[in-house]
Image (tube, rainbow, N blue to C red; front, side, top):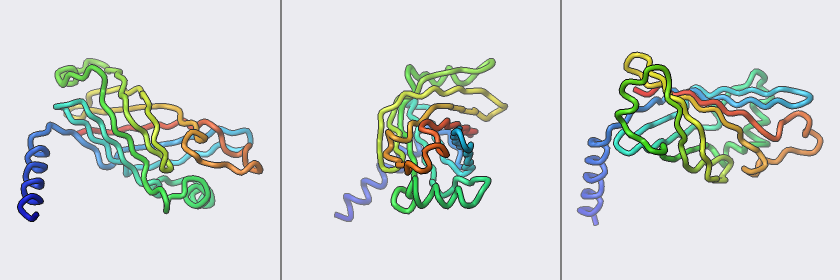
Length: 180
């Protein structure tokens, strides 16, 4: 059993060493909710984003408690009542860029927009999604930006009837990763 575990670990380390990955462990994620009574914005600057240049696979993970709000009470309600961060601590995305060719990313003149298809998990609910992603080169850094809409009802986030005018049914999510 110990030999099998060591063999599995060595195979995994070999795969990691051979993969051509770029990552950002201080990625930016923002969500914005525009509602009749109140706009709500939160920012997370500790998101992890990885792009594997050998496969075109993308992975993103972020702790929900790393989202910060202008008002501390909003942050408390977000974590305790809506997203239930103790029960569902992370949001994740795992997918693959359509028609990925690593050579397309070496000499981007202005920007390159692609689609990434995968699974988005929020509040313990996983959905198949296709998201836009735009790449730009800034020196040796590949900047990846995505903007998309999340319908909170699809992820079983419940809003009390009393607060329905405070929280939008659709939330704009923006992510930016500086991949190195």
